[in-house]
Length: 444
Image (tube, rainbow, N blue to C red; front, side, top):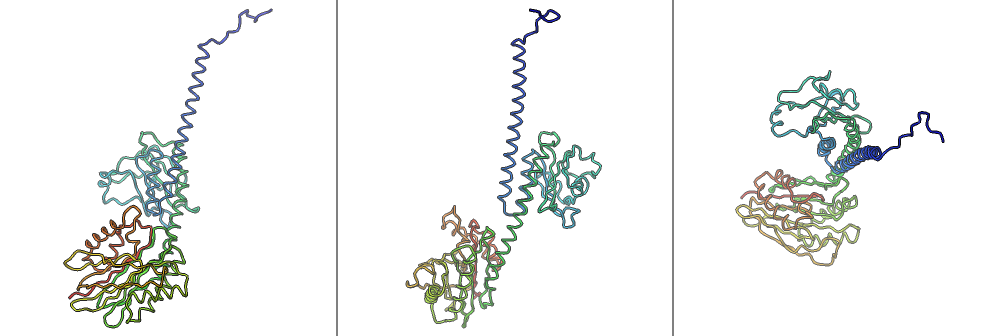
């Protein structure tokens, strides 16, 4: 058998060659696996970020969350979101994140950027922008005095319904490296989700404003109740589509008498709002029969509703305040409603607890008891719905105690400011709409 021309046998790979090749291949596979895991982590981070952004239902919170999320995804120290003015050629709002308290203090009095210099590049050319040295960029105009050092920049435009809404800016990776193509890709993806989140929250706000406006149209404007002063406030539920059934009313009657109503129709939809309006109107008509006690009027209302409507369950309190020797006499009857609060000079605030009775629409045949108490001059009676105090994580007694503290703290305010303060600082979680009506007796 003839061998190779040179007479030498071909060299067979030995174990050391196979070992080197195997190590090389394993190293390559390990690198690929690490890259794949990094990509999966970044993708998961992006998905988590999108979910977190879409949970917000207030525009300022959404914008700030977009900035901080982008910073987390690429490890940036600083971030900002500039919202374009209607003209489209400058920024009208600039939301920042990452500045320390000292850095913010050093910039106190400095106007926010309006889109000049490098920032303006993204406004006029809304393509992704990566800059490794801001100071060397042809459009750079420098930073204001006391501005923290920023050398690198990654900018991406945010579009909403096909129009540029604003620009997302990131600066200074925590590891000191410039932003790379992977950073750009993930921020572009985030910007797409951000545009959807911004549009959703703007739609949310429009729906909420429409629901609130509709609800307010159903509520009365308080008339002149002299010699008393009165103020009321209504706040819709946190969910934008949640029309409420809360209402209030006050009607002056002859002889310095005033009737006050607070109520809550079960449900959060259009039928609940319509039932609230019909119940309020029926009760108004019955109130002009001044000879009847509040309990009698509520019984008449319950029978009427049972006979001619299919209204849902309703809680309410009907009260009447009239002159008495040395002050005023408050008479009331309750249909399953929360107690009202009395703030009188020189003594602690107290809830006027009494037999609550059954809500309207349960059993019209049962009698409705009446209650009364003396109200001194310059006292305030606070009527409210349960949306002011209900919190799923707190017992009702705790919320009522918190409301007592609030009412005591703000009792000296003018009545309009007083009810606004209660609505602003309420102890509930805001899941339900709320109504507050406060009536103040004249000084002695």
